Image (cartoon, rainbow, N blue to C red; front, top):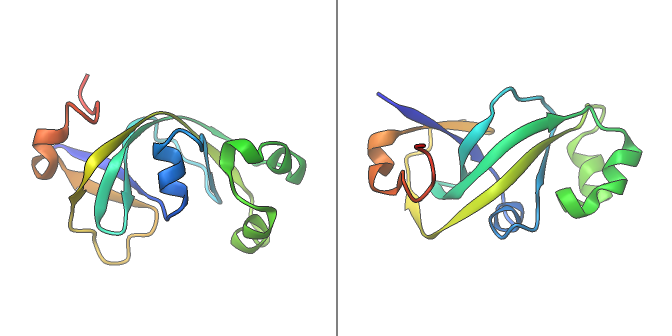
Length: 131
């Protein structure tokens, strides 16, 4: 059974990504995942985005120089990444769903969730999940 990767992102950042105002997602881990992924908030798929690169670890200067890409305040970064390395997951081509899709998010999922293709089959083309 085919599954898709769903990246869990909190507000207000998920809205900024889907509106094209945020092109870097700041994380404390690298990722090797590339390609079109779903973006998830709470128990809803809100859209999809193309994950094209992972940059880092970033210096404090690089983080400060790229605020318009990641949209996080230094206060947030300092609290989020205490003593950790920071990476930018580079995002392109966001697609926002008019109506979010309710999903069953596994308990304990914090970064990624696997989403079964059958659960979203009528939305796959719109989300550009198939080539």
